[in-house]
Amino acid sequence: MATVFTRMLTAALLGIFIENAAFEHALGVNVLLYTARKKENLIGIFIGVIYVTTLSSMLTCLTDRYFSAWEYYNILIPFIYIFIMAAVYLLTLLAVYKFLPSLFRRVKKYVHLSVFNCAVLGALFVQSNIGGTFASYVGYGLGTGLGFLLAGYLLGAASSRLNSESVPAAFRGMPIMLIYVGVISLALSSFWT
Amino acid sequence: METSSVRKVRLSDGIIRQNAVLMSGLFAGPVIGAASNLQNAVVLCWVFSLVTLISICFCRLLPKKIAFAVRIVLYALIAAAVYVPVIMTARLLFAVETVNGIGLYLTVTVANPLILSKTESRFFLRSPLQMLKDAFGFVLGFDLSCLLVGTLRDILTDNMLWNMRVQLPFQIPSMGRVYGGFILVGVLAGLCRAVYNRRRSSGSEKKEAKQ
Image 1 (cartoon, rainbow over the protein chains, first blue to last red):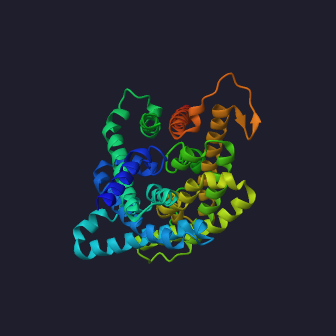
Image 2: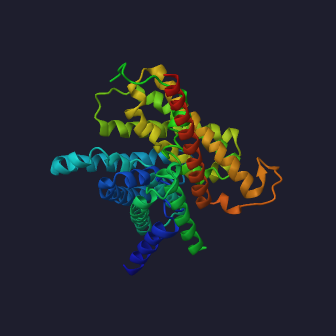
Image 3: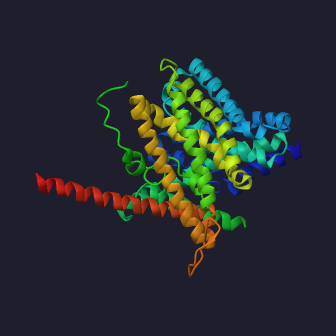
């Protein structure tokens, strides 16, 4: 039990800090920019990302284990992973629609953003390349979601300063945010190397 | 929803005004992560262009009465199906090591916002021909920015351009890393906006002077 927990924790830390989807792989940049603009949706979107990466990781672990020897598996990976993400998305949406209709009305406009984005698909693909046990898949899925939340929080916390008058008008918004994410990415990568 | 009130399509919209990398940052991630040299940039452009244009055409055929939540899923599945022959052509045309080296970023082209968001909010509001022209503009805008970033990073990182030596008195190896990509794309985006805003304001001044 302790070994399983250690593996899960190690994989989660890997997903949060070393293989952070946003800072290390530049995945889900458009979602980060969207949440920095529309902060009212921030929590909902990131809970969605954490939920989908964790649950989809469990399922991709099974497909990786049983089908990875197949000759065409690498080419079909996007289709298989999108299918898994779609199943998680539709089943969850159906459950929310049935049991929590008020929540459904609130999240239906942006929930697809937290499921079908580069960060989720990319994280599943990175985990597939790393491989590992079921526990490490779950840990990495959870860690990726939390790492993405960390990136969103850091960007959201600085967004008012990044959009202030002290920044040249042409650089306000997206350009300065990319430079800011670049600086954090530089700091993180120099910390680990 | 095909209304005549929708503004006339201009190629420059996707190439300049709403460029998916340098103006809106809609799909900047793969350019930052993958376009660390010109070869990578060309492969990314090939896969992105084909996957996006073909998927948008197929997605257009879906009936509009399907619920939005299901339609989004079908768009993603169509893009993932289109990706299979496209990646096979990429493996035939380009070095397999290059294609495999940026495999992660080629895979995520199936979840690109031009297919999953712009289709609903922009492309499908137009007639099929106008839609194609508009989508082509966006794809061309992405390709041009991707090639620009790939070229600059290739030169700055190794003083090379497609394996040819380019003599420069300095080298910036960190431009080949992800953080280098973030900073370069951010600076280029700021410069593009500055040039665009200046041209727009000088254009409106000329109009006012004429009136």
